[in-house]
Image 1 (cartoon, one colour):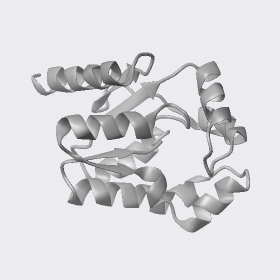
Image 2 (cartoon, rainbow, N blue to C red; image 1 turned 180 degrees about the horizontal axis):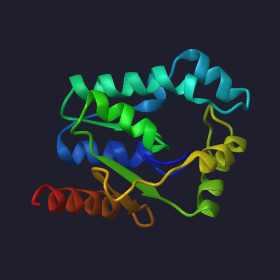
Image 3 (tube, rainbow, N blue to C red; image 1 turned 30 degrees about the vertical axis):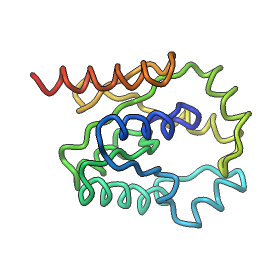
Length: 158
């Protein structure tokens, strides 16, 4: 989870490969209306996000083991996913805002870089009482994936 440019797709795919799990990019689960709205430079609201969050939750509940890359920016969004998949474990990829801006300005994606500010305003970092971990995405891909796996293993031992 995290805002645009945090590396969700890249890290999620690599983590899924490490875990022997299927990878699903949450961007592929958006209704066409959401993609069109974002492509036009308009941020999604909670009503727009609801069917998308339900689609993410459905994938998680039916396709284990699976890693899904999705923004899940607010706790309420994560809670909506957990309502269907209680054992969902979230990884918030933490990246400095300057680096996020640089990343989104360089990529070809339906969501324009101008929407990053709305995502950052919406972001509620993963809280300590939520299942998951905040992990800095500040190293090479393999190192970040190893960090995530180590934190997951440590938390499952508690």
